[in-house]
Each structure stands twice: as C-alpha cells, then as structure tokens.
Amino acid sequence: MNALQVHDLGRMDYAQALERQRQWHSDVIAQREAKGPMHLLLLEHDPAVITVSRRPDAAKHVLASSEQLRTKGVQLVETDRGGDVTWHGPGQLVAYPILDLHRLDLRIHAYMRFLEQVVLDTLQNLGVHGLRDQHATGVWVGNGTAERKICAMGVRVSRWVTLHGLALNVCPDLEQFSLIVPCGLEGRAVTSLAQELGDSASLMEDAKRQLALHFTQAVECRLKQTGR
Image (cartoon, rainbow, N blue to C red; front, side, top):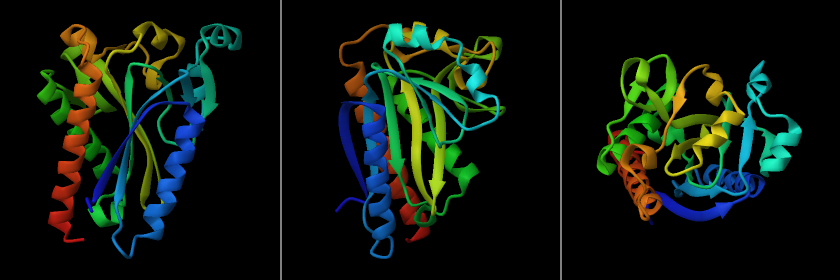
C-alpha cells in the first residue's frame, strides 16, 4: 500500500469536504502505530465559498455584503485553520493533505515550507516560475512590486496530523477575489495558471496530476529520510 493515497473528489461542497477531512484525520491517528496510509484530497469547491479564520479582524477582510454574496451564490463560513480570508470555488484546485507530521519529522514552519516546495515543483513542471515571499506564506509569480499570488495556504494541526492545506488558482473567475482582501494582504494581486499560461482545456487535469505526483514524491522522500 502506498504511504500516500490520493483521492480526487471532483467538485464538492465545503462542509462535505471538511467532514471527509475529519474522517481521514481520525483514520491516520488510529493507524499511527501501524504506519497506515496518509491521504491527499484533491477537489474544487462548488458552490463557491469564502472561509474566514478566527484570527482577530479577519472578518473585516470580507468586502462583500451578505446580500452580494447571496446574489453571487457564494457561501460564507468560519474555519478553524490558520491564515486569514480565502475564496474557494470552481477552477481552483484545493489540496487537503492529511499527513502525520511526526512520521515526516516536520514542525509547523517546516511543513509550510514543505507545502510551498511541492507547489513550486508543480508550477515548474507546468511551465510557470513560482516564488516564495519571506513575508507572506504561499506561492507567488512575477517579481518585485509585480508579484501576484497564485497559491494560498492555511493549515490546522491536531495531534500532529494535518488538516486543510492549499488552494492553487488554475482557472477560476478572478473577479471573485474582489469580494475579499485575499489572505488579508492589502494591495497584493492574485493570478492563476490560466492567466499566466493562457487558457487550456486540460489545465485542471494537468495541475492535479502534477500536484499529486510532487506530493507523493515529497512524502516518500521524507519517509526515507526519517526511516519512519
């Protein structure tokens, strides 16, 4: 059995996806001593949803009114992950890794860098040069004042097993990001693979395949290093 099992869940409501995460999270903890499989959930949220963390003032970064959100069919939910405010919807590839950080010998800061590297490797294979920003978690493209965020991240760790994860903009409606201050970062632009590369009918499937590949390789590499 592979150490990491990848689950392509297609399009899914946020609440249903959260319940799936919690189920697999419990399974990973229950099978920890037996070194059972870890999991990677890949999906697009449909209907679109804005998630707001419990960080003080995070709710202020939702710019749209309740009526505007209803008109656009966008849900608004509080989340227990880290980070600030994010938008998720069709065209955005969401990855929820359910990983045992003890087995991978990672702590929170190192885990965030681990996620960033997986995305950077994925983008490289898709023909986009990604960047880190030392002042803001996530992955960016461009340079200097022209940097544009292409991947947002926010996680939760319970009993050293992860929940939530990352959101890679593949081909979403970027106008939706005007409903919020993405990640609470004023004046920072948002982009997508489609915007950087041009539209492609296979872009989402390519992104899923590459992200799954690099997650699998990264997990296997860590397990070889730790011997766990």
